[in-house]
Image (cartoon, rainbow, N blue to C red; front, top):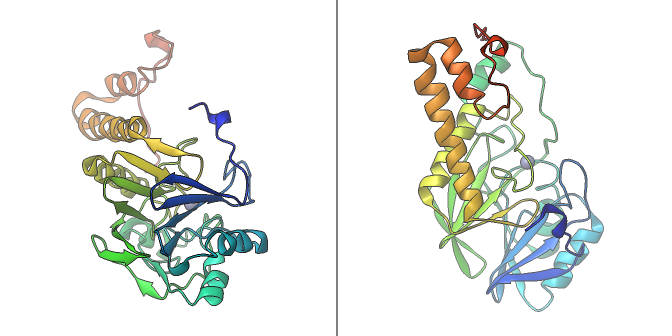
Length: 273
Ligand SMILES: [Zn+2]
């Protein structure tokens, strides 16, 4: 599918598969593409996955879409402002608990905690500071979501408290894989090492379909891309660099660029850290 082809109506529930619908939130932007995808999982009892931004219109749309059903769970991939803030109002309206890995500070890596301790506290873009889930999910935890069953997978990198949710061979991947742009990794909540490990984790899971937080489903070709990306980084950054030296390493890293003129390749790589 061409990127421009993904332009669903805002606020209308669309059926993606049996027991799975999507409602697009009214928050299109350069960071969210057409808006946040809110998923409605279940037949009679519904789990709302990523309720989305604070928006009365979106709250009304979700309640209307589930007027013949019962919303029993609110499940959040991570607490960025385009995914989690509506959880509170939706919970108040329905009585459904909010399930997530933890508050916005949860799941930060040791490296990022050390940065914070050293006073490097820039970043933090788009965090929902008030996010307070009712039920904390652990990595690998199998739990009821509506009348379906999900498995929580802790997948930090984009954000420390990021979870993906496996539903049979379908994966709700939040913002780990965007499907239309590169995922934001901004310390101290984002961590690139964690991000790559999380990509490997979902590659090994081998889902057939991935439903992202924005844009449409990322079918297996995107899982493959994530896989290639992580594999490439493994081989280039982890294995090649220490063994081959800077010049061959740079040539390998930039092998997809057009220039083959060795004089334009860096003779040394000077890392900042
Ligand atoms: Zn995000």
